[in-house]
Length: 324
Ligand code: PBG
Image (cartoon, rainbow, N blue to C red):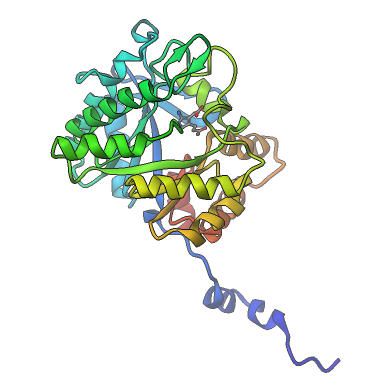
């Protein structure tokens, strides 16, 4: 053979492969999600997420200190609302002394350098288990947006660096931005879950927070996984309304969406490697069917290659170990 081009030359040794590698992971690419519960010195493993925990605030603070020390710049907080505080209105969501608000204050006090982001949606607080208020089986939009902007404002007051609305209601980014502007919170950012799909891969997360919908599904607000163009429309709307960072969720089944969005916007794009993506890798690794470390690196690298500037992942801590 007398070939003119030989692609294997650029793959011939580890040195050459490193030289031409197009995608590199860094600790600063990652956002670490954290599940917080009431109590002291409590750490509970989530059954469907082996190796991942719900922790009381004191232990969460230790974890945040550790994450900071290994170079993870950001955490995304979720709280498990005690059952007796759940109601139709999700009113605990806006309690200034609620677990989320206390968590933000104490974490920012303990590790001021950490970028603290908060989940904004009503599902953990709402007795209906939906991201919005429910009336006669309908998920209300405009009434929900009012609560979400009050909730966002309470997180901003507690010291959150970013709020992360994950509810997919119409007009919530504009409402949150307006609430921030009117109350002089002009340094609080909005990371919008702009293209969030109605996905089966959230299953383990709903176990973690006991937040599964009480009836029906989330298809009237989260997107149909058959759709691509709609993701771009939703994302551009959120940017128009004032989103600072946009997000695609889940990640691995939506790499085409991440790329599509990345090609069309000029704000940072995040992707969320969700609970089910974590659990699939863990389960296969437990059975010896996949090499866990390699699966973590391959999936997260492919998410970044697809166009994600930031990756929210339950593997954030593991990755730092794997790439250093
Ligand atoms: C709440 C919310 C969910 C997730 C993040 N925020 C669950 C849902 O929409 O049902 C899922 C995260 C994960 O699965 O890791 N709105």
